[in-house]
Image (tube, rainbow, N blue to C red; front, side):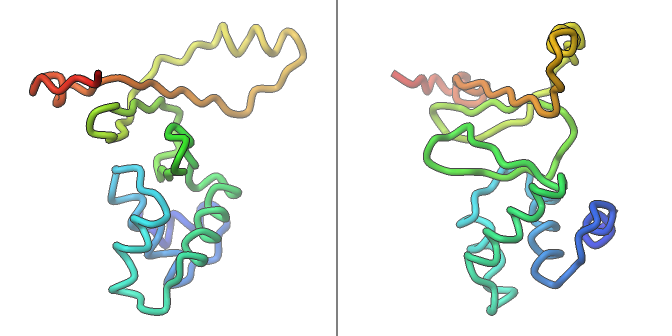
Length: 140
């Protein structure tokens, strides 16, 4: 699915900027922040501003086309993969990885029995990634 089709599937009116930003999110699984997206795209789209990137990402999140991650207290990062999954941040290299998790229906079911309606679950893990561990780079 192209970024254009992806935006339409979430009822977002495609524009040059929106298509470029969504395409970046879908093709770069690095969980970029606003500055990273702006820096990557401003050469292609000279009229792009950080405010446009911010407002566009906010629109994507509101429509469910992207997720905002707050795993790092300093920066909000964004993920174009909206299927349920967890995130792992390496404390050494700071990369954020997608981590598959088994769906724990009993946990959500227990909330439902008490009258809660669970709409979102955020799971963040922090530690040392396999690549840094293999190199012996430990966070002390």
